Length: 456
Image (cartoon, rainbow, N blue to C red):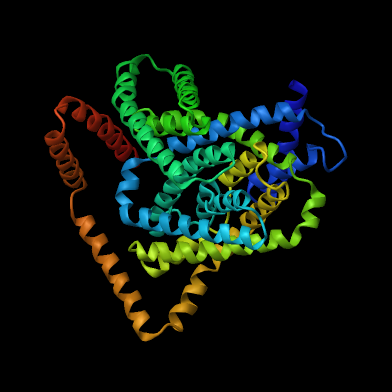
């Protein structure tokens, strides 16, 4: 086992260093490292695939736990309409498009369903990294784009649970699936609310005794405990890890936990992506070059179209909507996880996995270049737009600027207090448990205040 870990780490480190020198995402380097140490390139594997798969599964849990830690309910609510409409448009549009591609390729319903799920999620990690490297982290569209990515991550976890259920029974029944969605929604709500009521209060009480070592051990213990709870409830382990990350994101220690988890997440995430690469046969990339190219074009065109339309319908300016759509032109970690799930359960065609991974690599490589084309494309479209469309674009720009000026003029403290005060009054009249409601909002607001003070 130590030998396997040595081979994985030294190969992944060397290849990722090369990709850094080439100014390419290290995720691609990890996948290439997996191809190098895997069984397909040199006729035999340098490591035990079972060990790598076990570590990769742990890596998935840590990645989803850390994604949950980055979730901020306040930020999602602040973006409101943009996050909801934008994410819904992208997800529904890409699901329909992906399912249509599957049926066009003569795949059965199960394969088409999995393919659609793989194509509907952009990569949070890759998008944020590309935005940062492009110097656009302070751009206006980033806030809405981040909220959409958070919403997509939540839907992706839900899709994992639903696809697992559908794949096990090897059937797609609408009524049963709807019942599963309702049960899942209720379960998530209960877990999140109970977690917010208990865990932040507990951490606040023991805070004087929490050094970094104790905090990281306690956080991982809570994460694994929720993983076991999710499995006992009949849901996927990934759901439990994500939910506990969401709960801890609302504590005073959220940013500290996130910082402590970063090295551990990076190590196991690297192992996960190496395990993804090990499943790729280079010969299959040559064999399926046309489907890979076709799927890549579908991803790029579909994400640009639905991303732009969704953000425009959600209230963003046309330029911001295009910048969001042009930054979402790739698929990433959740696509790999869903592809691996289909392969593990033997419900997807073996050809889908290498096609999806190769399409992800290609679209990830093209993302920075496509993002640079946003402004020239916007200028071209605006120049050739009809007078009526130009008027709508200009009007939306003025509306957004006026809204920003009005928001800047209002005091954030007063706005927050008013919103939460209204929610308290509504809930207090509905439930007798006023003390519990107050505790819930107290735990939420204390983390918000700390986060705002750190930003200042």
